Length: 267
Image (cartoon, rainbow, N blue to C red; front, side, top):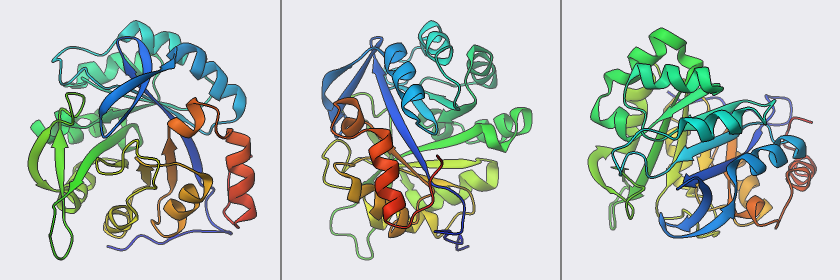
């Protein structure tokens, strides 16, 4: 199934800052390693809400690898700062976990490792809360030398990059949508934190095979990378961290640049 690409006259593209939270602080690493501090999640949530971000994503990146629950209090305090949609992920293993996050102020739930371990969790969540609430988080890594190129899903990525789940990324994306996922965040392990650009081949491959919105993640280093993800990669939204957290670009600058390139954005 090829998803229709909408530019100019189509749906507005979204810019979404990502808060990777570890030990109650926002961090940013390279390929899930070498994390450095980026600030307090509550303060950053307030800042991005004021700056004009379209949505915000909050990932408790070590909850799954540490086999613990997500930090509910931090999520609640973060949500209290927002008037834009909030997606929360990390360590959510049951429908009751999802319900707790929604009650704490989340608008959407992102599941990654738990969905791989128990695919029925996607359908159970969709049936109870609606497809629009269920986001599949996908951490994919290229298979070196594969021709045609293939990507494999990894889980528990908060622990030094995690490990392979043995699932083909495209097959997993299609299965997740069939089960009820309403959106897919496609994160490339190979490009994460490198600031060299998103994996455009991966993005396009997923976008061409699913009918739900696809969010690009992993590798944004400049505003042209955002443009490429939304055009060549056919993504519906771009997730970014480093370029916003450390003040290299503002949300306003990003939106103005995308508009100049003929891409519809929310104002």
